[in-house]
Length: 285
Image (cartoon, helix red, strand yellow):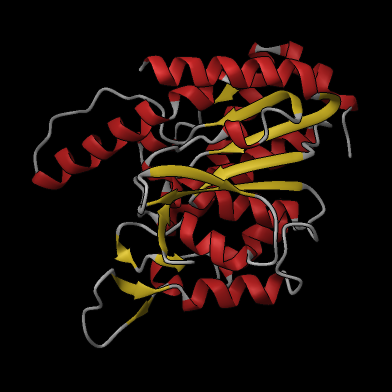
């Protein structure tokens, strides 16, 4: 814990020294289907004249953030979902006839989709700075990937749900879902941005009655993700928490419209309650 405190303090100090006033960060958490709320958040921010220049994300937050950084609008992302490209997890999964050693499914569909939508497949070719969080299983640490021409590979790694998707192997090391150890990776952009808006689609909630084993599992995972988000949350000046989690879960991909709306409403309400955020209006890239 003391290491985490010192690390966060060091990042904050660097953040004060090297960040640029015109840089505005947006950090998007992982959360499966709940991550569709990020699209609504982005739409509401833009409707209020706020345009982030730097994006960071884990898992679904990394996917949505990268599409936004590539220039896709919220409306275009919603259309992709309607066309089943980002609709159900089964659309992004390629099941194998026999059980592999590291996961039930490959990332072929997701990587092909990214290559189709972002042909240059590079971080440097994006319109906005993008930082993708992954977990390196070989050293049990989270890492930030933000350079190079393996964009599809790092997005696949960041969204590689343990046991569901295969691990991504690079230079003899294994990488999986960034949300496992850092679900709100604001550290990836903290030294470059004076202000960061964090969006956490898995905020702390008191569990209702735990009726089934799966209920206990889900709330246990959420508790871990909330704990590992704390350092990232501390680096954000604003935290938006869509309430989709109160009515939906991480695999409710068919409820994308309602989840999107929860993100939009949460952001609009947050601005009403925190009007000082509107000072960021002029920071359009």
